[in-house]
Image 1 (cartoon, rainbow, N blue to C red):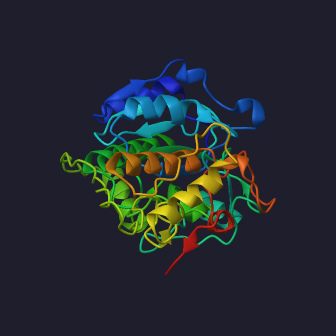
Image 2 (cartoon, one colour):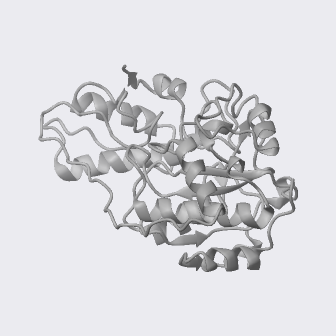
Image 3 (cartoon, one colour):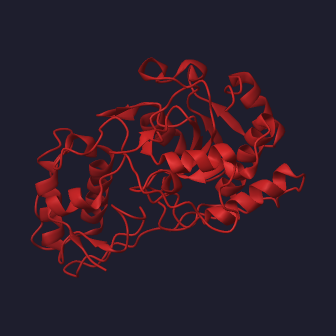
Length: 326
């Protein structure tokens, strides 16, 4: 275990690694330390946010910094934008890790995390141990339904390596959220054994290649009257290709209507009998995003911890009427 790197030193080592750091308001004092400890750290957790964004500054402020109803910010210490900018969101305890498997913590602590595979936790948010006290957290701004941009990956790699070097840790101290918690899939399209190998190489002195700039993929709205395709993006629960929100446009909207009756801050989309126009599709996608972001008001099983778990799981979505396929 190690004491946290001082805030000013974190900023210095990131900038020394060539990263453009954006300091958010009062980030050095923005934390959840009043809710628990953050004094003896063991590693780094890598997350995806669950949605693509073209406005990372607003996303960092409105979601990562402030949080949302049921889960106050900060939601990480560091937010990584698609262009590789690093947002310094908070310093101290943050609502990012939730509950996880003590065996995963043991692997990180002893640096026995595999370099040719991944950890497979058997405990999650509802029955695991507190991870917010144990880890730094990087939130990478992408859906998880495709690889992160090269620029975002580059920033996350060099910053992870910088933290490890400062602490004297090996790359086995860097794990995915899914390696910590059994009910998490993130980060999507990012094999962590390969990620750790790259971190290890940087710790050892190799220089990672400069990133290329790749715009995130866009979603094409379906023509009016056609079946809604699987919503691509959040890998594992909300935006996974294995999940359909109903079979037709009207069924899909009905699911959102049913869901949003439980969310007073979300305006219900009226049923459009003629199908989903482009604008209507955009509104529906926005509804899905708000549903994802404000899920904590919904507690069908009584087993979800509103203070830690950050996205709706399959059981919640089934309760809402969503059809899980595949």
